[in-house]
Length: 255
Image 1 (cartoon, rainbow, N blue to C red):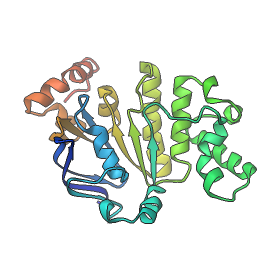
Image 2: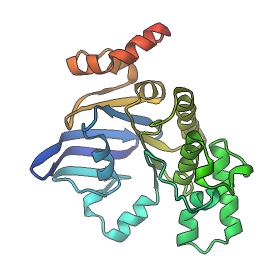
Image 3: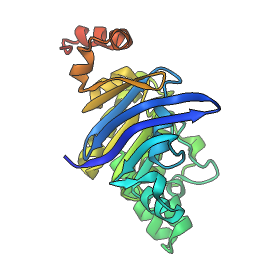
Image 4: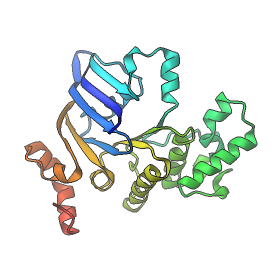
């Protein structure tokens, strides 16, 4: 299987505190790879290394086969064009209409006409099950779930090979959360992208993921398929996933 991301013995120190400790994993082409763990476990710190916002104190991070820390600013910008990022709070520009948010990259960095960008935005919005009537709405006129879907449409606007979802169901009600889960899986099929999902939503992680990595205080404590994680013998993992295991038992889906 082709590796999209490869992290080797990643250590990160900030102000004398190790926030990542010897983290190693691979993400393969076409899979949905979720990172779970408690607050402060290092989940988002890993994604900051993947997109090149942080450099390792020790270790290496490869994305599309390239060592992130050795790229020039221009090379890093080129690589980032192939990475879509869905922010936890959607991070839409409140002063721009929906179509301008989705097509922001093209408005700022290309010579495409506004009509061309508008058409492109509509194509991407349709992939997240939104239609023409939302194009001219402002973010303040959208529900939380719609804002999240617009944020996802913006992330896929440049046809990236990798999408990073940072807490994609945060702040959403359970029904809308499951809608976003189905959308993440659907987009993987429609766009042939690879996804890394950072989440505290255990039902989400165990329903959409091909593999899950569990972090505790900056260290990897377990990694495997959802079924393997549910059967983990590690005391921390057993306790951490106990709630979702009980829910799945109730649905007759637990291993």
